[in-house]
Image (cartoon, rainbow, N blue to C red):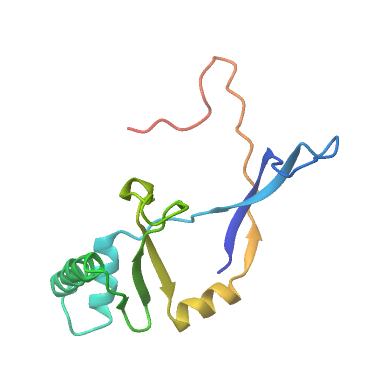
Length: 149
């Protein structure tokens, strides 16, 4: 299945923008739905000998220890899923004595996908999603949508 996108018009942030090109159209990906944590655990349980509760416990423990190792400054390798690392950079100072911890930027979580996820990224297909125009209101001022009871 292809990634869906629609076009949005945004301000052109390039320098020396030509007249008539102040705004450009850009692709914006649309999610086709959401897979909840419970649903994910159920699907994993159905394709293994573990119960849904077992899967939840394992994922909960993975997250707990992922946080522990990242907080210690370690890179955490999660097999084919990928690698997690906590990174932090700063603005620069002319001398080491002038450097202050106030110059540090907020920490970021870096995820490097494993081989199968990298392959998915490289082979992802896209298709344009046409947004439906909203329908005008009915003559009595209401909507033509069915009422939800």
